[in-house]
Image (cartoon, rainbow, N blue to C red; front, side):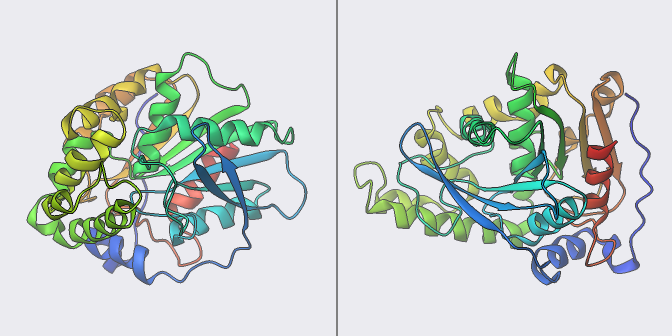
Length: 318
């Protein structure tokens, strides 16, 4: 599939990647959306909370939405995407990853960019409803990497899964970490780290033999967090082993259904490896758009409708 030529041209201030990123995360008015929470039990007896929202009339189509690092189903980008999908005949299942729904999860592990067994559990819970004939996956940032890995690492998956959309996706986890470590990204980096340290501290009392105050003090970077928690909690040798095995770039050639990936050229979270133009041009199932602007999940068009939301809907309905 040839690369998609992007025609996204935002208003002047949104041409700055940092402005687009910060405005969209912190200043965009939150869309009004009625959500209904459902808790599912996972195979290891932990839990996930899913926030459903529904089309105006009964639908046989559902979109599973996956948020980014330290996000949740109430983030404005999740609600914005859910709202336009609901308005166009789709039910939405917005997933809160482990520990992201406002309650500390039960197990030592939590979530990461490649934990596809939890996504599989969500899909199975939806299939059990025996209500939907069409399922699509929509992921943002870390959630985009997760769904691409899910689709590319399996020989088979449920026939109801028809398409997928990945927005602002770090296709190379190590490359994106190194990019986030650049000085210009200190605001985002420190914000993520602050939240992750809080979660580590909250879990320490439940797992004192695995999570210690001395290790907590050593978590002074995202890399150290992944070395000291993400990797051991999820069965990897170290952070670099985690990045290598879970980066979705290596799984793209195996994807068998139509996938749309939208990354902005001025996304300060993404490394050069996150723009695989040569690979995309040779893959019939991969529809890859590089927008000149957009920052990280910041494709502002109007406050009510973002370019990424409209493009996702257009692709899923095509």
